Image 1 (cartoon, rainbow, N blue to C red):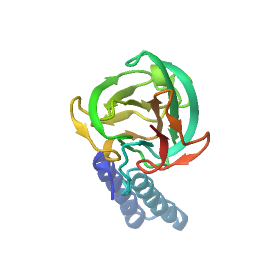
Image 2: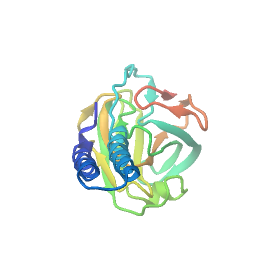
Image 3: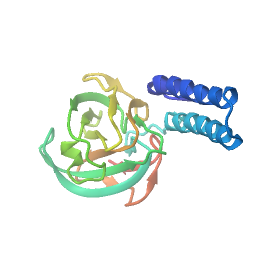
Length: 216
């Protein structure tokens, strides 16, 4: 299964791959160049398809847990001052996505969208300390029914040039369902209450919608 955000890119990749294959089989050239063009056409298709894959995830709905919104590796777990919405101290967990990770973003908890905002910005490398506040990003806050509020932030990186965010204020969302997409690598920061019970550690690899970040 492939994400709907990848449809234009997949169509373009198919056109490019077809053109390369057509050149390889219709224009006289050294045999090695035929193989190079065919290999390149296959490579283009494989890379684009793997990037936009959207594997089904089995989220165990639980009102006491916060799941990772994305696939990737935990690169930061620290207490920070959150200045956009809460304006107080929170535990921030940052998950870095490489270009080979699944790039679907999923809701970490269920509840009502209290805040959803897009911010234009820079394209610093995703692991840069200032990327969370200076890069292109979206910020989403979800009100859980137990009154806990969780915030997550999609952050563009040096390669990511488009963030897709489906969260609309006042909509009710289900934990683990599709909340957006980030094209070509980046990171997601999740802001948790200080008393949250953290379940992950640095460098741990996570699966979006399944791995548990913390519990209430």
